[in-house]
Image 1 (cartoon, rainbow, N blue to C red):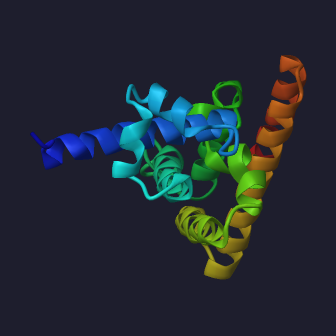
Image 2 (image 1 turned 180 degrees about the horizontal axis):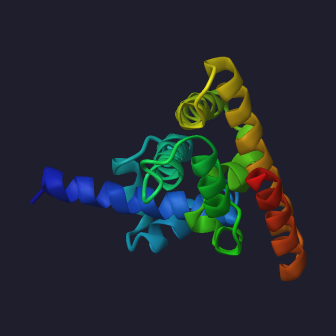
Length: 189
């Protein structure tokens, strides 16, 4: 008896959720299909009923990760904030030790940026499209002249990502916190 469309959709979501977390935690290249499917509570054979290949899954996982980033930076308590109030609150949300320690649940850019740069064009194209959407939404929150707000959004996100990459790279928790707080202090001014 074939599975229902609803069952297939739920299974696909389980695979996608597992991939989104594993890719951010362990990296795309380091995450094999067997590991991924085991994490989703499924067997390897079911993978190809839902995704063409691992690259196809990577594209879908990037969309899901950017959807989460949009929610984390622009909703969930930050909905009505604009200008400096949003910038300070979003910076504090992004640059914290919890985000540093839980890459699987965090922003995909510091976790996967280097791999995306070496990924097939299709993946880089999706990344660029979603990056553009994210900075566009951030620029709207920053207010002011659209070109200036866009440049500020690019600079802000780039600084956040750089700080997170460095904070994750250093083994010393106190130094990591100092890195994250230094950028928070700069953004509060």
